[in-house]
Length: 112
Image (tube, rainbow, N blue to C red; front, side, top):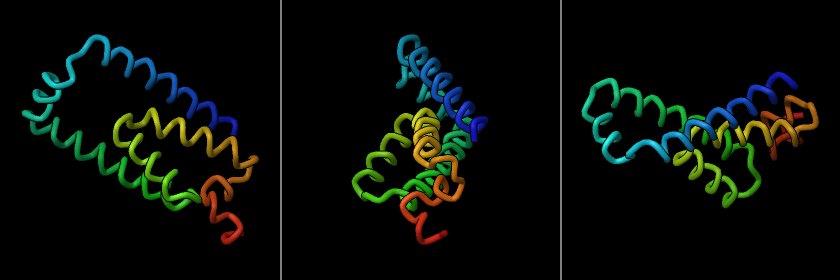
């Protein structure tokens, strides 16, 4: 579990760095329109949001609160794998080194 926590923290720090870089050096609307004008740019975005959607389904499954799920999903859709990495780290911390608790969250007692 320590390796997974380390990898998720590396993801948080890496995504923080590239998000800061992109927001301070790039132009979201200009570069976004260029990306959407290329077939592989469209493929990449569809691939990304399919992944976000699938991961969001797991978040909704394991969270107790619908409001909390909605907030997490909104952040995933906006901030991407920064949020995913952060969510995984929090889920690992709260799982008390139990993989079933990590994967099932609120449903842990039902799965045990």
